Image (cartoon, rainbow, N blue to C red; front, side, top):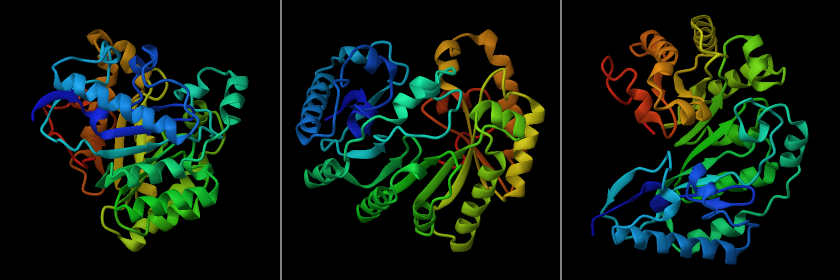
Length: 341
């Protein structure tokens, strides 16, 4: 049957430190739906799946659950699929990260106490839950398996290795989000196999701006690790395996031509072939519909694409749930879609 529904609800499940939800939308949080504290028990995941099923039934009837009112991520899709299996698993139950990026929610401001609380939170064992989803035949073959956090390179090594094995044994494509501050042999191993992407958000080209955004002085170390990871993917040349470097534009901090030039120069030095562009999400949330504030962002986005879109060594694309909106800034000059998801 055909009906309008939210794609995240139909096909994604996201495990956070104390929540399980279809996505990261703030409206889901505000309306307290899917947000009951979750501690990793199987009964809790079964309850979530029951709520999910009830919401899908509402959409089938042409209705919309209240948590989607005012949602910035929600967009209606037409679904003809009756199985509603999960094709995107987000693993973020570990919140620990040694970085304190200024745009990261747990690191907002200079509240060191809050950061300490986040880093010391009890972590539930996600392995039985993932096995339950597989046993219930809810995982789409070839689904995307996203490991984030927190910082995936700071997971216990045995747990990270188990997660990667689980993903590979279920024929999942693997996406790992990392700061790059630590070099992981587990990540290195999976980069030798097909369908693995390591995404490192650098957001800068110079040491000064890097230190301002990341609030740790690890500039040289991060770029050294990036080069090592890229050398692995270049050596083994596994299908679809790559390292992507991300540049989150933060208006007023790294939105200058000189910083973009410095970033591109560093990308060339480490032989990076894939660059992803995003804009800081809280800025988008506040200013998406304020056209007057778009000029500076548009200038930097256009500069990035003028420098790289036709480059034979580096492929550029947008990143994140606002990808289509970001393409509006350059759609009259360039074709939509370069790297793909």
